[in-house]
Image 1 (cartoon, helix red, strand yellow):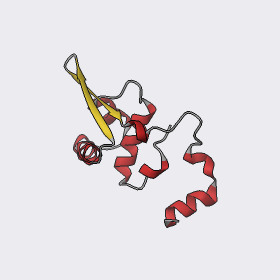
Image 2 (cartoon, rainbow, N blue to C red):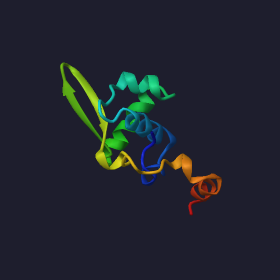
Image 3 (tube, rainbow, N blue to C red):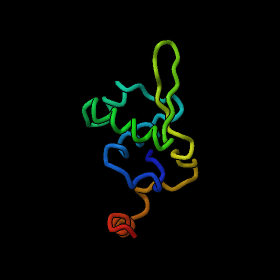
Image 4 (cartoon, rainbow, N blue to C red):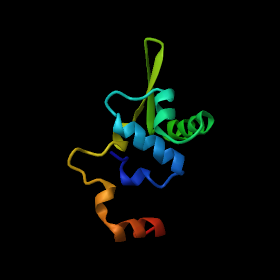
Length: 99
């Protein structure tokens, strides 16, 4: 699953982290799980997490000495919402051009 469209106009790494978190929205992910899911080094992921946290797009919850990162509810698409992948070729071009 992908993050809602309105949160996709960010740095590629931010979007990749959001998408990974949305895929596991109910249980969240540790930083190490994010590292395995996102093709970036730990420092780059940490910087992305800082930006996402500053914009209130993620939360962190600690339990049993583990911190799990969760996407904010507003980032996760509703169950009936159409994923961005279904918007078609022209829709993707329009998004790239900023329309």
